[in-house]
Image (cartoon, rainbow, N blue to C red; front, side):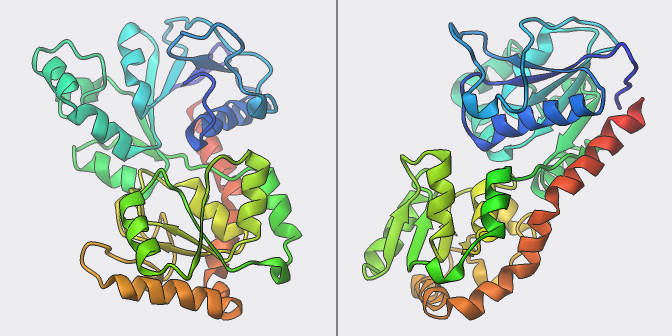
Length: 329
């Protein structure tokens, strides 16, 4: 586990100039730690940027970043699972991996190049199969039940929860949402599960399908707020944001059972809205989508408990931060 004192600096590694849920969460953590009087610094990695690596959307969380890491036993280095090669550059610092995207990690370490590096022991990436490397990590933070179970499969026990929460613009929009403005739109993310989604589109051409692509963050909020259904038949590497954003903005959510979607702790929707797309009749899914559109006023009520849980997630995140960091002082 980790230890923090008044001289500790908490470095949080983050890819530069990247606007996705993971980098935003890393910035949110820095913000939350600093408001508690701790000294948290974003460290952008890899260091290949020539201009300001902090996106404008993240300026509200930090006003500066660190360009170096002091390798000291008082300090802590937190890296997401896709930047673990950074850990090998430091010997004294306390090391933490924050598991945000289990599947992306699996994909990376299963690549031929990475396997060869592991075989010849020249790989800097954290190798979960290597018991010696597992012992070098002081703490594993998990954002999902899926991540926790993945780590436990490798006898990793130094685990604590640190989840996340949605941006304020989604919360504000949800408070003033008018259901009468909802359109018969079915949204999907073309970056996930596209092959199966294309089967659905072909099978049910009368449904008004809309990909979430080429929109600004504000436009995404407006699009979700105006739609009735969001489907996600891709892999679920962690507790993804778009499914939660859609439920918060009162879309019916329909998913598969891959990754975190398998766990009710991560995606707590009724089983009737979860499908094993490899072993079910595609017509059943289409009928469920159509029913969510036709009987929207009734179907959306089935997501109310989840929506209320999403609204509590920032408070939960605050409590988890206090448990992980304040209790370590």
